[in-house]
Length: 242
Ligand SMILES: [Zn+2]
Image (tube, rainbow, N blue to C red; front, side, top):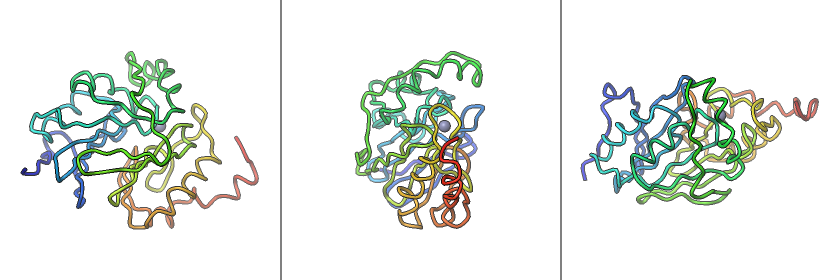
């Protein structure tokens, strides 16, 4: 079928094309979180990653990508449970029908406790959506002919996951361009965050394109040299926790 991408001016969307999939990004919520729509180029099937806010914009983008065929949306994945990555899950799922919501099991508690953050940060109520299926390290998420492997990367939150495959990494709030997500929130752990990046992400191929939960894409090669956080193991020896 002819491949569809969003005219950037139509929805403030950015698009990156890879051999197997096309990645469309919308920046949503007052916290400027990245919502990604991953389109399988062979089949047109779409995977939604981090429906963080602004459900109407996300749904409009999905409408563009699927030519209105919402049945092509395979699942919604939460890289973690924070409010700016999950606040639109309920509305998006309600509009699309019964598509499964997937996330790491250890962040379900976080989703259930997001009410106060939603009131403070988004100025409205939060509808906690429990996952239809939890995913663990090594699980595979398939849509169309695409497949991404789940990497458990605790640290920013206990149940944070990254998704890897086809030369791309969806890194959530574990790894940003020249930075990382905060470990000072709910059950965050700086030592675990550093270990996740060093042991699970940096060993992946250096030319892997990284699509983070906030900010612009990068590569693992760039972060291996330009990001100071993974190298500061001395800080963990000096202060094992904070
Ligand atoms: Zn977060």
